[in-house]
Length: 332
Ligand code: HCA
Ligand code: CU
Image (tube, rainbow, N blue to C red; front, side):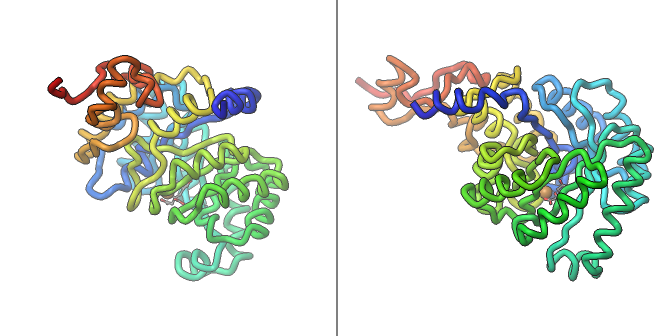
């Protein structure tokens, strides 16, 4: 059976896959979303209880309020490590240092679109910014993730060249961002494989959902050897958002046999709380946590699941905190 094969194949890296949840940073970039400090603390605690490895808590350079927020989240004593987001600028790195976080995630693009329209700089100047900011962060004791923004619209050779450059600077992780969601799983898998073959640093991925492929791309990256996946609760984020926490983790658990001790049973509650705080109602068709995710209507389906729910369910609902077998009543 395909699933069993995967379980065997991936056993060896079971403990290597890590989740970074960025509901508090990327998620807050959703239209109309602005979490209060109390809400952020509750979300962070829930994510920690669920078992994510990292929480990206915000972009401290934005404001004093954001610095207070990131500092507060960082001082909660959570098991998850806290990451502050930053541009490749000393002022942003300083703001991250102020928040006493262990990690800074620096992001920058090197493709033509980024150089011309975002920075108005030459590639060599961007390299210099990267060098200065990574050195500054490392000198101040931070662990550094460098995100290559818009990597999926950047020449692979250029990505590899940058990866090797930052490896030489002692960067701790490199994130390959599909910033505008244009990757497809086969292409993303190959890209990750290629980069991994020529880079020593651990790879991380950040997948946007513009064509509805964020989760598929994140899973493809995992198959290709990426060791950290970015998620957001309910897929919140810029535009169509990013890969969804519930889907990524349940797929890893169910389809690949990954056992990380995730509290999958908390997913419906986490989704509900975030939907409430974000004031964005949950789509009933959302996998795993949506109202209809385990709902059966067709008579044939209803009859079959009454005998054995596995007939039409890919996973037992209790595993993901969905207790009730939901079905439409049919007249005999
Ligand atoms: C952004 C862009 C980003 C950065 C990702 C990262 C992207 O919102 O500033 O820093 O890991 O999608 O490239 O979210
Ligand atoms: Cu993003």
